[in-house]
Image (cartoon, rainbow, N blue to C red; front, side, top):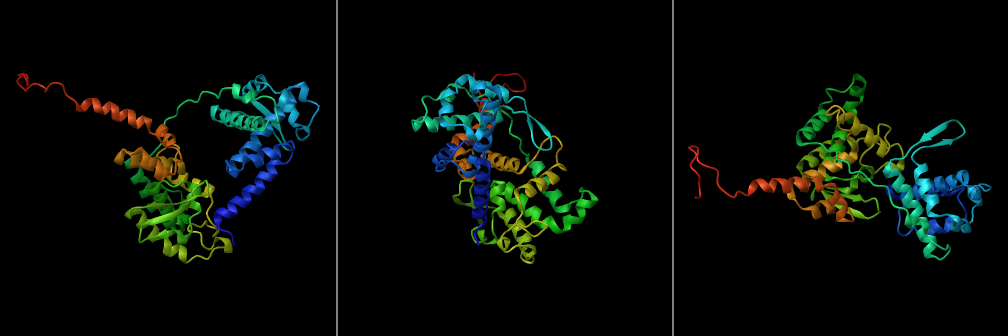
Length: 362
């Protein structure tokens, strides 16, 4: 039986093949060519975004209008200019799609537009490098300016309140309380692990029972790129996991492939990313209505706490599994700025006067 992450890889590979259907035949070479430097999920995103790009060309420009997407040839890329791509970026602000049952009105913010431009740029760069097209017009199109957003995280008092809510279930609805007695130890273990290690939710749901080592207080996870990593946890996480495991060990998984899973759903299958997102949201809304808290926000909370305690951006990057420390740094520049402001308070040029007004150091 393949391990969980192998199962996920197999499912996403099938999803990629489904997304590639109907794209121009020459795109098969592109997806094969970038497979060594991109994840399957990234290529699925490329397939989705490039389909929108080709559909836009066919709908908006006469030189492509007599073709289906699947009929386009690589020579058609030579007819695409930077003007076409810039018009595509403008089009993404607001457009309409019809399927068999309904009409969809779609919009993209700067992040969505940047992602689609990245797909177009990667495609043109690949074929230009292979000398299969004459130029690379996509490189002439700038990415949209992205507005910095404040990082949403829980403060220390909110963390304590969140864990209290998970343990007590006091403020849940009557319907939620019926399930809480069955899921309390599991939910506390999940949220404690997210808050206490900074693991991604996709990594968390992939943990098996055999991946926990209480001698080291460590857990083995599989990062989103496929590499394995060891995360260490403190006594509070140890207590939460040990409180949950006896209950977990009494449950027989519904499917043999989920026998080893650490966290199970109410259906006794390996818990899904979506289910963890829902349970975090359920408890978090009892703590704050101003912040939209997700598992990723719990990861940000952990990173913030670690950086506040250590001031070591490289340690934070390593523990969070960031390949580039600049990815970490951009998330914590606000804290660095506050530390620099605080530095101004520590240096005094002259001692303040005595209570009677007599100046010092003169």
